Each structure stands twice: as C-alpha cells, then as structure tokens.
Image (tube, rainbow, N blue to C red; front, side, top):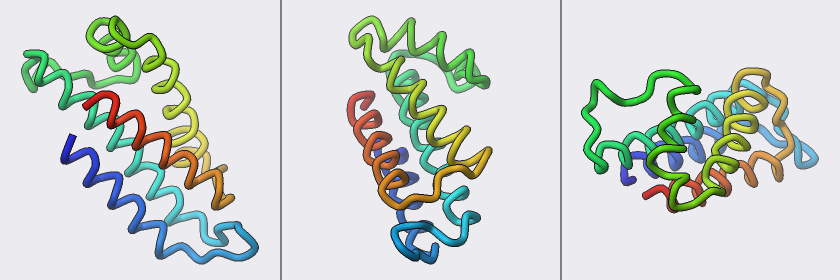
Amino acid sequence: MKEALRYLQNAREILKTAPVENSTYTDIKPVREAMGTAYLAVLMAIDEHLLKKGLGKKDLPRTIDAYRKNLKKYLAVHNGNLLREFEALYEALHIAGYYRGNLYLVNMVQDALKAAKGFIEKVG
C-alpha cells in the first residue's frame, strides 16, 4: 500500500502545477497526467493485495477484465462494495480523467482523488 499511496501523492503534486481559474483547471494536460497516475495507484494497491494473497508477479492482472475477476475472487468476497468502487474509479480516473480529459472542475478532481485514497486504504 505504501507504493500506491506514493503514486497518489505524486498525482496530487502534478495537480499543483495545473493553473486554476474560477475553480476550473485551465490546462488539462497535467490533470490528465494526475488522473492517470491516480488510476495506477489504485491498480498498484490491488496488485499489492494480490501479492499478499500469494499470487506471483507473473500472475498479476494485465487487463481491466482480469482486475475485475481478481477483485471478485480475492476482495469482493469480503466487501461487495469494492467492485462497485473500483468500477467508479475506473470510469472517473481512467476514462473521464485520463483517457477523455473530461475532468477539469477542481472539486470533481479532488473528490476523485479522495475516493481513490479511500479505496486504497480499504484494499490495503
């Protein structure tokens, strides 16, 4: 979990470089970079948990579907909300934030980072 939290902190540092005007990021590039880094933090937290469960590095998921499958098998058994939280983070951080660049309101971006941190702490 330590490395995942480090990545999340890196995402916050990247956001500090993004100019803000009227509660809106005016340069989307650093926001996209930060959202991608935060998404990697989420994946890293899952990977760390799976390694603790006995999976080898070569057995870690490599696709979103494999992450879903492993979440169901190793994590959702204990907490059914984790899969829903992961799906929401996938949509917010990876799709809207990174891939499409549709997150630019400061409050929305900050909420996404808070949600990522909460997920990481639950997984860890």
